Length: 279
Image 1 (tube, rainbow, N blue to C red):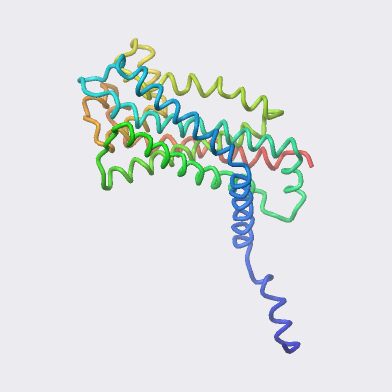
Image 2: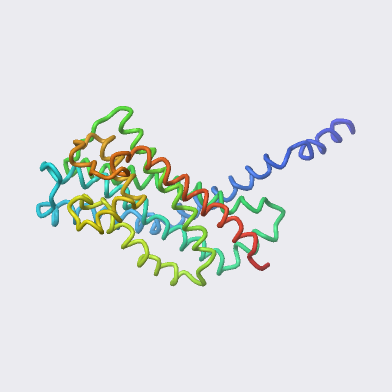
């Protein structure tokens, strides 16, 4: 190799812009997260175990006691709601992983390196989104084993996309909370926030079957919009999905709008919180 060739090779990295290195930093964070899942499969087992048990519990134990507006089988109504619940609870796992890295000094080490400040936040989000795809796939296989048969085609793909879209928005809430809480034990306490958030929604019961004031709160819960939209896309009869309120009548629209609002609020908060962490 000549001196000229060597000089050219040495200048190649300098020609790459900030976007290239930011994406490279994000990929390294994603690769790190995937490696952790590979070496600690118990984490995946825990994430998948709870929703699968919930599907079996509500489907077989409580299913016969539940009512569906307009009548009909409870299983087609329940399953989309369970998928939404799994996406909603995912922010607790995100917060726990972020606070674990924070308390172990991993994030401080990232901050001391010449890497994009948004790479840790974005990498965490992409890693969790990949894990969410695996969770949904396994849960849907469980639902198929229980006799759930949704409509296929574009509706199925659209529902899958809306579920991931909700998870994408809630990831940033998890990252932000993970950078706020002091330790992993406190992050586990976020279940006290997630539980009423999912219970006061249309995941298990239609809002029109609740008391008026509670039904109004449940109908305007962002989770309810995704649950209603996915039910419609999976082929659940509309009379079992849509209530009388405006937000219920426009569930597909709001299932796309709510995650945009949540992302616009919490993604900047997460990045700003990361930038303010002490070295």
